Image 1 (cartoon, rainbow, N blue to C red):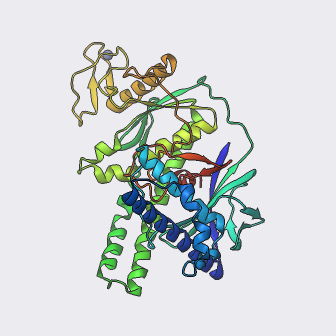
Image 2: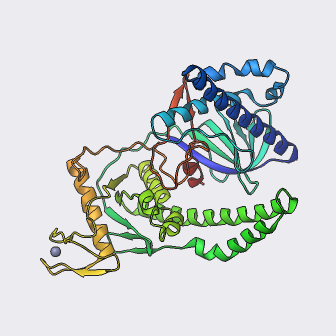
Image 3: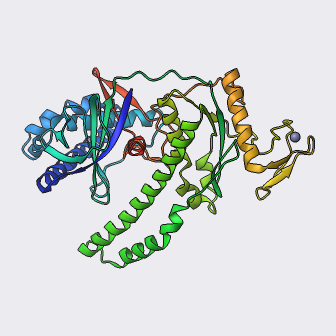
Length: 423
Ligand SMILES: [Zn+2]
C-alpha cells in the first residue's frame, strides 16, 4: 500500500541556495517546454508529449546559455517534463484546467522520482546532501517519490511517498453504519445524534488577518518592508490552515475509528459557492477536505466510505415511515411528520436518511438515480487543493487526480491535499 508522510525539513544556508537554484531550474524547464508545446501546436497543429520534450533536455544542457541546467539533479528535470505531459492529459480528459506557467513568487516545488534516502535524522537528497528533517513517524518501506516544497512562509517540507509492503485490508460492511449530514451551524451531524460544532477558525483570526493585510497594503511595492509584511500575512493564513486541518483530522479519525460504514452526502460545493452570502463560510469550512480524509482513512482500514446522491431528499423524508413532504423552509429546525406523528430534528433526520440510503446502495448496488454504484479508487484526490500547482481548480471540486505509469516506474503526482493531511 502506498503511503505519504509529509515532514518538515530544515536546510542550512548553502542547501537553501542549492534548493532555490533547483526550484528555479525546474520552473524554467516547465515554462520553457510549456511555451514550446503551445508554439508547436499553433504552428503545426500537432502536440508534443512529455516524452518528446524530455528528449530535448540533453540538447539544452549542451547549449552555452542554458548550461546551468546541469547543476540540478537530472531526474528532477526529467520529472518536470513527464509532469507536464500528465498536466496536458488531465486537461484533455477534462479533469483540470489548461496548464499554467509557473511563477517565481509563492509556493515552489521539486520532485525526486528516486534516490532519496533517510539517514538518521536527515534526508539524503541527490546533489544537495543531508538535510536535517523532523521525521515524526517511522517510514518503513521503499521510498518512491519525494517532493520538496517551499511555501509562502519560507518553510520547507518534504512529502515522502513510500510503499510499505503491506496489502490493503479487505473491505467489509459488517459493523456499525453512520450517516453524516454536513452543515454550517454545526459542522457535522451524525445519525446517532451527535452534533459537532463548526469551529469557525477564520472568525477567530479575522481581526489579526485584517490588520496585517492593511499593513501590507500600505507598504511600497517592491520594498523590503513589503516583503516582511507579506510574510506576516502568509503566516496567519498558514495558522488558519493548520487549525482547520487539525480539527478535520481529529473528527474524521474519530468517525472512522468508531464506524464500519460511513455515508456522506455528495455536496455540490461549487454550486453552493455561488450564493455569495454563504460563499465565505463554505470556503473556510472544508467539507471537501473532510470527505477526502474520511475516504482514505476508511480505505486504509478496510472500512466503507459511500457518497449519497446530492439530489436524494434527505431532509424532506421522514425516516420512520418514509413519507416525503413537499417543502421544508431552511430555517425550520424541527418538524413533525403528518403521517406517523414523529417529531424530527431536521439535521438528525437527514443524517439517518443518508445512512439508510447509503446502506441501501451498498445492498442493491444501485444509486438513487438508478446508475450502477462504483466504488472509487483511493487515488482520487478530492481535496480542496489541486493535485499539482498547474492543475488548479476551484475550491472543493471533486475530481480525480491522475497517476500514470512511466517506463516501468510510477510517475506519481503526490496530491498535496493528501500529503499534508497525513501530517
Ligand atoms: Zn413519518
